[in-house]
Image 1: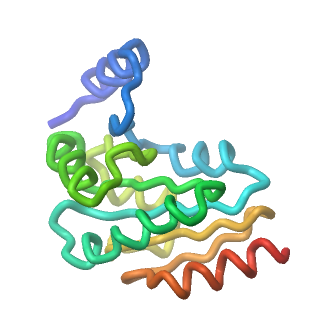
Image 2: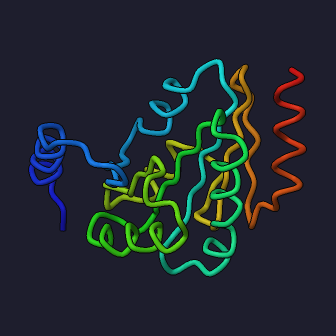
Length: 160
């Protein structure tokens, strides 16, 4: 069980540790809003996935393609697996050619509380994607995102 003291210690360790490409950052309360604030004024994508979610892995080529075709569109990949599964999540991202993508991992054992802080209507279904336009308008999608649907959204988001 991760106590608040351990989580604080982990946070401090991560804060002082040198950042490395592909390192998973802890995702806690407020992280979703942090990602949104960091990308304010730009269309961006936040995709939630899990090591054990087959549809999530089927969707990974879309995120790799997004990074290749549209490097101007920020992508945040968030593993819902939890800190004990960080090594597995990093390995899966590497398998999909996304080892250097900005990525997070759930860092709170109370996942319901984390999900609620992101979206009160989200019950944990995966994959779950949030498309955020430059004005902050958000579209939540459950299930695999197809490249053509993402490209259509990007075109609409750019026109706004």
